[in-house]
Image 1 (cartoon, rainbow, N blue to C red):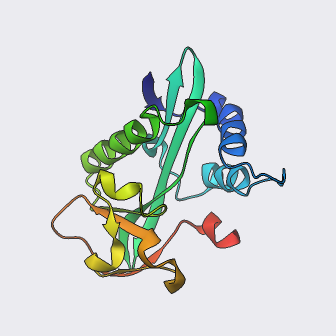
Image 2: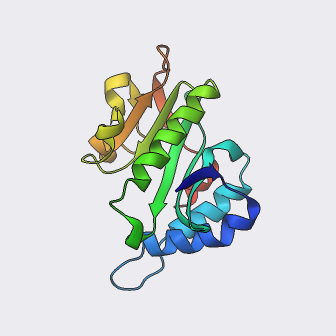
Length: 168
């Protein structure tokens, strides 16, 4: 498996991947493909933090992390993270998370936040964001709103995602 930065030619495959990974039992279209398309066009898009997992020249996983803010301080918002259903439980999500963290630290970022499964992300160092003084945009998210500190001086306050998240 190769981890690399997303290229514009990958976008159709990424959108299909997200549709399959987040597909619902009733066949309703999930919101993630539209969110990704909007994030690719957003001012908050960070090319180095849109990472694909490629196997045999096919995109099997993708993770995007975009600019967010804690108060007026820059921060990162991770997601969506998606892996094709037939490739799940093979460490691809873990590899994408590790690569995202490594790249974000190299870019000098201080913290990554996400809304996700409280049983999955703590394995990778994420913990409830409230423990760091980072407040969720929606208090109902509780322990599902998590943060990974990348520096000692993590800002505290209300987190704000990239603009396309406001349309969900």
